[in-house]
Length: 267
Image (tube, rainbow, N blue to C red; front, side, top):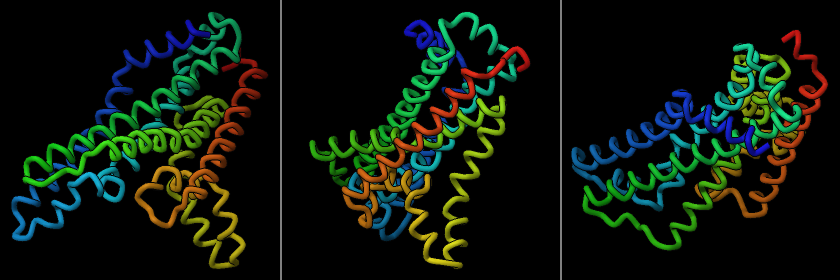
């Protein structure tokens, strides 16, 4: 199992795609703060941009690129990690080399979890660095304190955790369809369309407003956006974390069930 995990991590490190997706998140974060810094210098009243540069606006404004892009990148990574094995015809050699299929799938899922937190760390830290450097350039206090550091670490945990249900969904779909394209397309579409669908259904009856609170999008958003949204309470957060974990477990169990019973000699 450990050797399989090392093998997966080695292959991830050697794939440009994994680094490019992290770089995309970082570059969008840098672009956001670069835009705010430029706006601070060119506007007659720089109070608006200066306010958004400071760390206490990190959760409302500064982390928007990471909140949006990290989930998309994680879906692409999770689906590709399994789907590419089928499209590249490497799944049979992998199974032959692994002690068993459970160990192989577990190694891949642990790799996805580690990558989820790598994306979160890269995005959040680049935002924090953008805030601190930007504050110094425009001549204001960034607001970096010990308490803020704790909030930042908690944010990394929430963003990493919030990406897991969709990653597990994409991974499961890649296993079911033997294609990374299906996993990416369906998971990304669902992440963007679920709220719209429930909003339309809510016009028919209020029942769907309650059902929405048990869906993926509502609970992922609660976990990821918690610190920047005063509408969410700590009890809402823990409830959504629990629901996200339930979805993750369900999708994972289905993937294991299908993969361990499948005849891979035909695919």
